[in-house]
Image (spheres, one colour):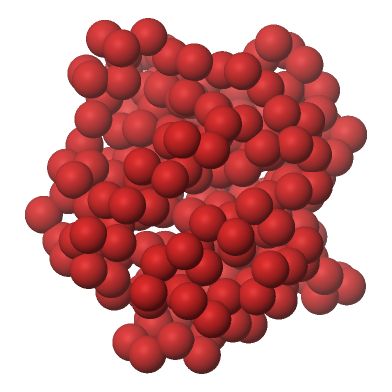
Length: 206
């Protein structure tokens, strides 16, 4: 399964590329990896934008609530130090977040990072909703994410959209949103980077 993911990375350099999978990390791995961040309840939307065309390639969300997780629908990233269950990745320490963003930011792609303060109830509700959703199919990252976000009061106006960029534009209008953009000059073929990240995770260097 992991080899197939690497092949997908090499062939499809956007993010919302693979079909639905059934990755399900064991309970012990998820419990061991769980990371609680002492910051405020926060939803962080990641949007991967092509530097040449301006078109968007992927939507993902980090949520800081009872624990901090990344929802990476139909994503291609993985790391053994961040166990995954159906597109939800656990153990998202600050270093793991950097690793995730670094994987997506490269010479042809930038990552727009939008942080939105939310209630703790919304943060925990979103984590539960992402966990309950199951694996997301190919190219459905934005449509599924926007539908889930729209269930919660802070995102009640979210458009149901297939476009990560349209969802990004909506989040840009929300009160209190903080925006940053990550650029990188890594090669577009990020298969070697993923392999190194995986090796570091297995060796305990993360």
